[in-house]
Amino acid sequence: MRFALVVAFASCLAGTSSAQRADDEPIRVILPPEVDDATCHVDSQISGPIHITFRALAACPGYRIWTAVDALPEPGHRRINAALEPSPKIRFSGVIRGWATPTAQYRVHIAHFPAWKCTFFGRYDCLLGMWTLARVPIAADGTFSAELPDLANDPVFKSFGSSRDDLRLGVREVSTLNRAFELRPLTSGTINGGVAIAAKYPAEQPFTLVPVQ
Image: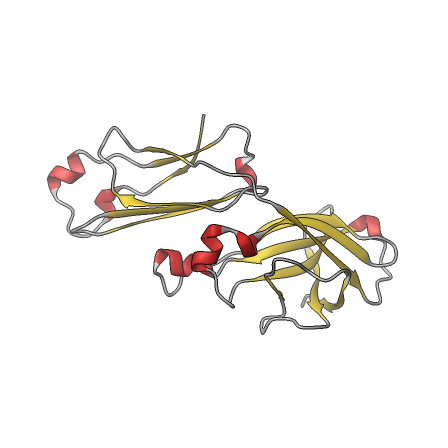
C-alpha cells in the first residue's frame, strides 16, 4: 500500500474550530500497488469552512482519470482508494519536417495541458503543469508514433474538458531531459501551438521545429 497523496489538514481552512483542530487528520489517497506512482499526477482541494468538501484527482499513464468529490471524511476514515480503470489507447503519429539531427540523442515528449483541472476545482488559476503522456524515439526520417490514452472519450474529461485542453509536443535530450525544440503542427493547430484532443488522429501529422530560447 502506497500513499500517493497526503491532503492538507482541514484546520488550514479559515474559521475552523478548536474541536475540529483536535480531530485533525490528513486525508491519504492510495493508488493500486501495480501503478507507478512516480508517473502519476495527483492533486486535491479542501474547501469550506461551513460545508467542507474534499476534491481529488489522479491521472496515471494507461488509466482513465480518477476523481473524488465528497464531504470531508470523519477522522479514522481518511484513507481513500483511487479505483483506477485501464484506459483504451489510440495511435498518435507524426513527422518532423526537416529533421536532420542524430536520433539517438533525442526523444519526442507528448504532454497534456490539463485546463479541465481548473473547472473541476472551480479555480480561476490552478497552477497548471504539463502531464507527460509519452516519450518516444524519432526515426531517421523524422517520423515518430505513440500510444496515447483516449482522453476524448474519458468520462472525466468529457465532463470538464474544453477547447483550452490540448496536446503539447517537444523534443528533449535523452541524457538531460532538456528541451531542445518545440514541435508545432503545420495543419490545424490550437491557438497555443498544440494539437486538439481528439478520438482519432490523422496518420503522420506534419510538425515543424521551433528552437527553445
